[in-house]
Image (cartoon, rainbow, N blue to C red; front, side, top):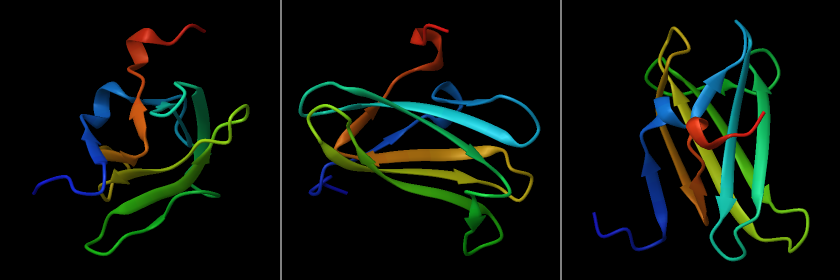
Length: 100
């Protein structure tokens, strides 16, 4: 509505990369100091059921150098296709900008 709490939604397909059938990867940048934090998560260990038949990955973000805090949420449909991503206190780094 008015984005009162700083929660930002992102076009998930450009920010979440599927590495293999079980593994996903996402990178975020903290708003306060601009530190990049990467998350690697799997279907079996990190993604849980969401109401409505989909799945959800929710993770607090703490940057390693300045301890900036935020939260990351990635939503999936019943077939584990990314349907949305949102963050609080962070912005998403597009996969096209990743240096591997």
